[in-house]
Image (cartoon, rainbow, N blue to C red; front, side, top):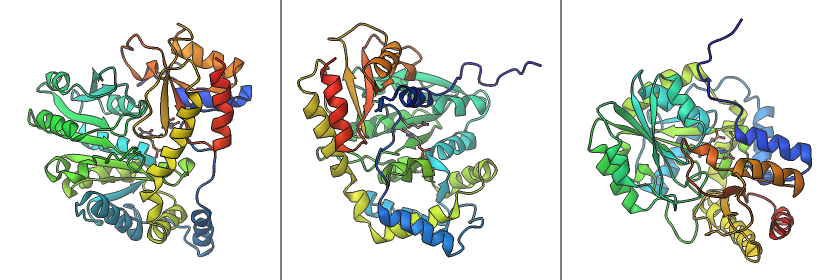
Amino acid sequence: MTIQSKLPTVGTTIFTIMSKLAADEGAINLSQGYPDFNGPPRLLELVTESMHAGLNQYPPMTGIEPLREGIAGKVAELYGTVVDPVDEVTVTSGATEALFCAVHAIVRPGDEVIVFDPCYDSYEPAVTLAGGHCVHVPMTSDFAIDWQRAREAVTSKTRLVMVNSPHNPSGSVWTRDDIDGLRSLLALGDIYVVADEVYEHIVFDGRAHESLTRYPEIWAKSFVVSSFGKTYHVTGWKVGYAVAPRELTREFRKVHQFVTFTTPTPLQHALARFLDEYPDHHRELGAFYQAKRDLFVDLLRPSRFAFSPSAGTFFQLLDFSAITNEEDEALARRWTKEAKVASIPISLFYVEPPKQNILRFCFAKDDATLRQAAEVLCQL
Ligand code: PMP
Ligand code: GLN
């Protein structure tokens, strides 16, 4: 029996492939984005406490109240907008689930969705499964959005635009001009926004994160998505959330309740209590990762890679043009096997990859791991 695939061009993600190759080859894994250090000890303790306190049955479908309140409190404190924790905040099983539910709440067969390449790999399959069609707009060579091109991509079928700042894989970060650009695009039709802000706390060199929740008239049409995995160094917990105006949240929850229904109870309680006990954790996360970025790029100065230091996220792009002309995917595999350092080829995040020689390296690693990796990279 042959099944007619609904996602015929989709294979296993490059993150899974490179992490497996790194493990098989005993390579330092700077590919898939996750820390090689543990989450805060108190947070781990709180999960155990919650489990022993019997908090192990289904939580409310929308997420436990203290966590939704904590999220609303953070949005008000950081971005100055009051959102209703009852009707406008939903806890999900990772940002991936939130992105999927937001797309499915909005996109109907035949709709067009504007995405920007390089584009995070979960967006297009979600759109395709909803019967929509992604219109890919390339970013500029320095990974900014060309808003003129974006506006030109709008048609009468455009239903949604998906944006991501701080940006994976490039580490670029939006400025106020991007907000104006988005506003000008939204003026062209009845268009909704999914904003992937999972790296919201990881911005460097005094930049401010331009959350769409800062701009009430834009947020009125937006699902703003984030993830506790990045913020608390626990990517495997898969706890995320979506903040959207009540009318959008209502539709979002119709999907969410039949995708996962809920997210593990003890994790939600632990995160709610930790957010309350340690509000400085997220405020200090930018400085924490900036120190890692600085260490990594300083160690790489003598190398043959070209780069500009990442503006946000925990990823650093390195241009290998001075070393080889190989295709990035083949090179990422070869260096994992031979040099024992794994990275992510970024050409896979484009429908039409431009001529460039760039790999993505994750610096969410212990300093010792970064030193070891940099020593190898400096010899290439
Ligand atoms: N969006 C982006 C840009 C990401 O980098 C990631 C994960 N690395 C996600 C979404 C998914 O987050 P989660 O693990 O919480 O599902
Ligand atoms: N977002 C992570 C990265 O960019 C990977 C998450 C995943 O493996 N799905 O590396």
